[in-house]
Structures are given as C-alpha cells and as structure tokens.
Image (cartoon, rainbow, N blue to C red; front, side):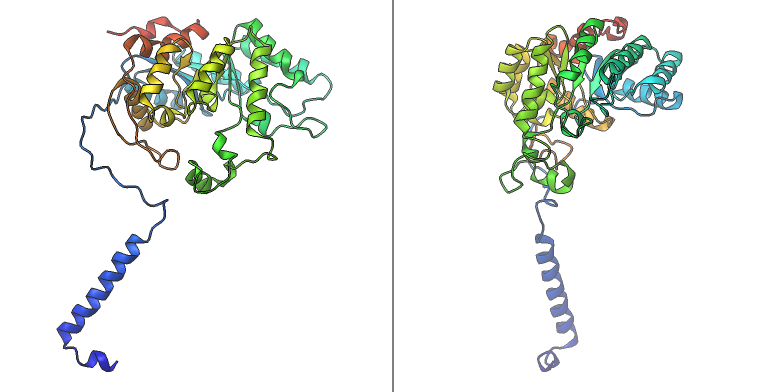
Length: 370
C-alpha cells in the first residue's frame, strides 16, 4: 500500500483504469474456437437470392404438425421461397398418416406430399415382414407417395434376438420389392458423416459439432463401422434394381464426389438428395458444378430442417457465381461458400423435374414459370 500513497488522486484513478482496461483486453482475447467467428472483410460482388429462380420441390422436409393452421403458415412461407411442393418425410403410418393426408386434401391438395414410415421394432417376430408390407400397401392406398427410412435402421434397431438390424437384412427385402411394385420411391438416410466415427481431435473437421452435440459421436462398436453400414445400403440398392432409391444427404459422399460418381455409375436406381450437405458443395464449386452437370438427372433439391431463413444459402450456391460468402451454421461448416452458377436446364432438373420423374402425380401446373 505504501506504493499507492505516492499517487495523487487523479493518477491513482488513471492507474486503476489502465489496469482494468488491460485485464479486459486480455480477457477478451482469451477465447476458444467455439467463440471465434470473424466477419470477413473481403469485398466482392454479391448476388443474394431470397427466392429460387424456379419453383422447386423440397424432397426432404419433416413436419409433425399437419393441422390446417400449420399448413396455412407453411404455404405462406413456401410461397416466399418459390417452393411449389413440400415432401413431408415424417408421415408416420396408419391413422396418423391418413389424418394428415385428409387435412392436406381438404386445404392444400397440391402443395404437400407425404411419405410413410416403418417402425422396425420387432423384426424377427412371426409375420413381422408380412404385416409391415401390408401396412405399407394401406398407407399408399391412403395417399402416401413414398417411403422414408430413418437412420435408426442400421444404427439403433435390433431384432428379437438383440442383434443389430442391418440395412440389407434379408427380412426387409419384401418391403423394398413392394415399393418397386407400387412405383413409389424410397428416400433413405443411412449412417451419418464419416467424421462422426473418426477420432475427436484437432484433425477432425466436425470437432466443434461433436463437442456441441456429443450424442452424434460414433465408433466401430457403436454400433458398427461406418463403411459397413454404408456398404449394407449399397448392397440393398443393387439387390432391388426395380425400386427407385433417393440417397439422403448424397449418401455422405458430398465431400468425395469422385467416389459418389462411381457409385451412381454402378447403381442406376440410386438418386441423391442434397439436403444438409450444401456446405460440402459450396466449398468445391468447380468440382461440384461438373458433377451436377454430369449427373443432372439424378440429383434432387432438399433442405431437411424447416428454417426458411436458411434456404437462400442453398439458392445462392446453386444459382450464382458469388465468391466467399458465409454459411449459416458454424458448428456444421466453418468455411465459406462459393456459387456453382449452374445452367438453367440443370437448375430446373434439380429443383423440380427430377422429382416429377420419381413422383409423376405431382401437379405440373405448379411448375410453370416465366
């Protein structure tokens, strides 16, 4: 304290302010990667796209509430984006699916499509397969236009003996065959990004996502190696060549388009949806553009989570040649986006024509444009 006695009042105040400010500066610089999210100072041409150039089908959406009030709200939001048709992949089965479709038909019969779901609990019980196929037929008769398979198949479901139900389990074959017979597509999500199985260290691109969403971490024993699950899916596709499959999230090969191209060449009944992988495409514009042009008949637009404010990033990546613009979810992708500047004929196929091909009963008048 003897030191401070030599300070005059104003000098002491200044000294305390200086120390306080210095500590604040040092503290503010002590941050982790989670907080560090700088704004780019780069000045380049911008062409923000709030509304898609062409009416589009969102092949990958999830809606639990299909009441009249919710449908009215959704249509208003869809119209702002130029979304012609929303495909609700969470249709369920039985009475819940029937009621949802009835609400749609009474209010907005052309704007929504519902896919049925199958509960894989109880695989191996007597007549389980027969009952599942019978219910699927009823759901399609009640208006379901496709079948959505969640990632729980291959990750979570076990049979009556406690064994993991593989994606290509032979007891499920009649389901895939029936979809081909009924002429409905199967949109299937298997596994998750390979990085979820990799070591969680400084070399893992999805480290921040795994830290903030720890339940997403997997391993070779929880429940099986990534490649094993992916290979099961591909074997199942090949086993049912008369059934059209839509591989959700580009089959988790959006970060390896050379491999995905080889798979598309090898599996002609496989199509891919771009939901939740636009960040992978937006960081490789030249490579992704060439891929989209070559496989323009096999790629479908989708978003996954229903957040209208996030759609413009998809539009901008697909439609413009903008450089270095931000993605909307740092934990998912900390890098910047670049536009693919796709030709109009490719955009039309990705936005709606490929969906019309797989679901020919959509109202074609919704896709007229100037």
